[in-house]
Length: 479
View 1 (tube, rainbow, N blue to C red):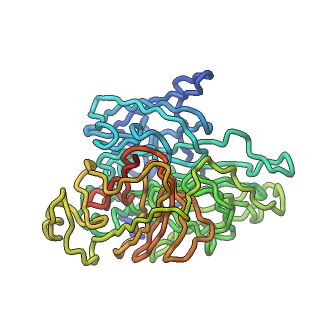
View 2 (cartoon, one colour):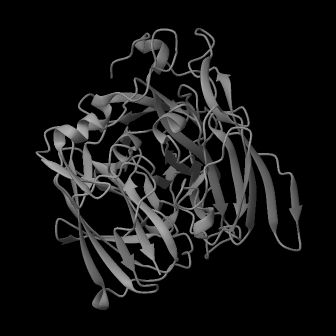
View 3 (cartoon, rainbow, N blue to C red):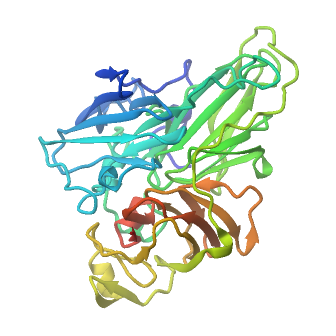
């Protein structure tokens, strides 16, 4: 990985573990179970690369990057007032939450954008336990890329214990928000809107952070079991994490529980916007040290280290992992499902000749001159003000067959719903995971199935914002 500042400085591993910042609760009503908060979006400076370099000018929620972690219980009601103190319009999208359409945070589609100096109040129930996150849906490539994002953790209503004992199913929990930044030698964020990013793999940075700082060693005790909540907030960087000497168990994807299982090759793949909950058994010897490697790209690099204390191990063997309780999702009726083919096209080396833009055909050269290089089913979106491409009947089951006809991977996100990933390249998936963002690799076909049980107009798009803003977004209407 090329680093404009010393590789040693940027990937050096310091002495503590950076954690997320808790968001102070303004009020809590026991009667209605409403937790109320305020988020202030504003410019600030942050010591992302440490004291040896100037602080970086960023955008933040409540003066921190990432924004404060919001943590509630399943079934609670959340009320958040957004105060916009940046110099452009913004919103908050509550990624992965099944909420009313008016609270989804998409400008011009579900709400008017929040102008500088104005406020907007979001209020909704939290039906699912899991790992979620929040971020803007206005000028996402820059606003998210400059630091506007945070974790939303919805805890299970009861303490999770093994049925065969009073032992908890894990001893400790951590949230890691992964991100990358494109810096120059002075730790200044480089300009956005680069055409190459839009037409290729998106904006890939040259510095990787965990919770807004250079990675710090994960300090553990031999014999403990960790729950690690991973959130990929990077614009375009994919992660493929190898925990050397450890075999992680995936227990949830995109907030939804799954059968505990080891990933292929013990490698945890995390596309932009995706979340994965892991159980990590600290099985190495006291006083030892192991590495966490990111191997997604051609040149693997050291992301972090696991450093064991010299304390005596808590245990020498671990029980089988226990599945998390399921969330109340509607199971797709595959025998009576309606099927739609969705084709993603365009980009560099894609061979797309043109697409419909605002109802009129444009050749690819005219599209590029307008900043558009991608299309969904032959339509390139020029803004969030879109007419629905599909109208779905409420409570009916649908299968979307997603065909990536490009040479780049795309994490495809459907708002307001979760879906089962049922087939890849016509082969049934092993675990039929529930997800809200699915990675569709280059030239790959992926079938997803869901019940259209949440009425409204919902965004359906690539979650690499440079791709979305260059045409790869659509709207699905549920009536």
